[in-house]
Length: 278
Ligand SMILES: Nc1ncnc2c1ncn2[C@@H]1O[C@H](COP(=O)(O)OP(=O)(O)OP(=O)(O)O)[C@@H](O)[C@H]1O
Ligand SMILES: [Mg+2]
Image (cartoon, rainbow, N blue to C red; front, side, top):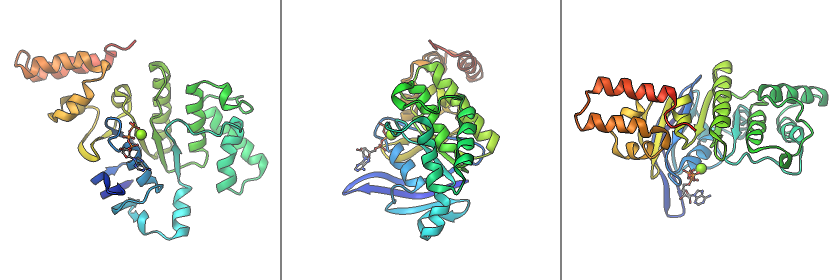
């Protein structure tokens, strides 16, 4: 479990994150949503220790990362896997070399065992046999999967994925979402997914934090989200094509043309059946 308390982060005199507090639970997909520029990536980078917040606490299983000494931080780093926005694979390295790179940095395994581990994680993301391919030779969805394979190669306790679905078609996105969900429950890890994809929100959003201009504006589950009374959140989620049908139902409810219980049922049905999915 990760607890974030009163995080503030600025660059120069520009405040990016203000007073963010929240819990990221174990065994769950914790989603960070919000429009472009709302601070999702900066927040994630603070939590994993790539940016140092101006103030606040970041507790990993009760221990404040910001007060750890070098040794403790290095130890913690090895328990964190991260899929960066845009995959961030090394173009000049093969798929296998990209993954072995992490093992070289943080493990003392023999070369043989490293290769074995690479094959295990490639199998996990259904990319068996792609070891010798270069990033330029594989599709965007495959790159994301290599990124995930690299992120889980050290058996992380905490997995961070920044926009795992950006640039992917809805079907491939669903595969990636399912993969992230499976890894989370199978290994019982704390997963944090940054996204503005409403399909993902409905599909895997066990716990969702909505950021608006660097502040936490709302939190809840995918069950609560379309019935939230938060206007900014409603504007954000109903801008999605995916939820147009659910929005129409909500509007009827707001206008008193349909009672709340019926609206909830209808909207849930629409979400289940994938309203407007291509
Ligand atoms: N290293 C940096 N130095 C200065 N400003 C930064 C830095 N990184 C991010 N910012 C600023 O912080 C704000 C939030 O950026 P961030 O990347 O967290 O947005 P985001 O919510 O992830 O957006 P997107 O959905 O487009 O990825 C932006 O205004 C951005 O310009
Ligand atoms: Mg971002």
